[in-house]
Image 1: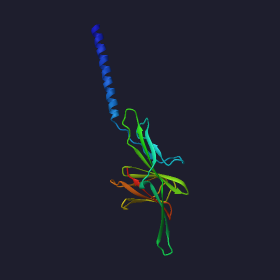
Image 2: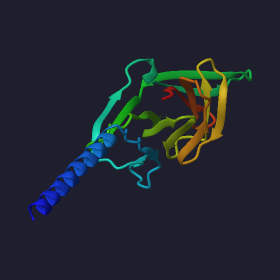
Image 3: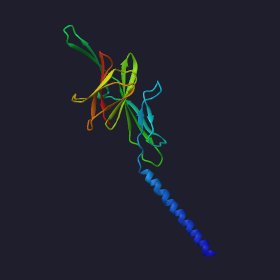
Image 4: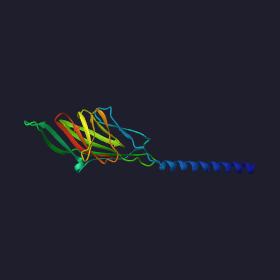
Length: 202
C-alpha cells in the first residue's frame, strides 16, 4: 500500500514538474516573440482620415507620441502656377510649417513590444484646414485623405520621377524603389496650386 502511495506521489510530482517546465518554456518563447505591427487603413468615418487595423493580439498601446517636425522636413511649400502675357510659366511660392509625425508602439504581456508604426501627417491649406497622412511598409507608399487634389507626383531627392498618379479618395498607393531614404511629394490640387513636401521612407 505504501509502495503504491509513494508511486502515485512520485507520478503527481513528476507531472507537476513537467507542467511547470512546459509553462515556463511557453512563457519564454512568447517573451522572445516580437508583436507584429498593425497597419493603417482608410477610415469609414468622415471625421478621421485613417484607422489602425490589428495584425496581432495587443493588450494596449505601450507608447504614443505626436510632435511637429521642426527642421526643413517639416515645411510645406505652396506653389501657384500661372502663364504670363509672354506665354512663359510664372511660379509664385510660399512655405509654412505644417508637418507632424505620429509614433505608435503596441504591447502585450509576455511578448516583445512591436516595432514603431509611423504616420507622417501633413496639413494642407485648402480654404479650411485639411490633413493627409503618409505611411509606407516596404515598397508601398500610402497616402490617406479626401478631396485634397487631382494627382500626385513622387520623386527622389535628386528630382528623378518615380511615379505620377491620379489621387484616389480614401487611400492612394504608389510603388517606390528599395534603398530610397527620402521622397519629394508634389500634390497637384488644381491647374494652378501645388503642395510640395518631403517624406522620410521608413
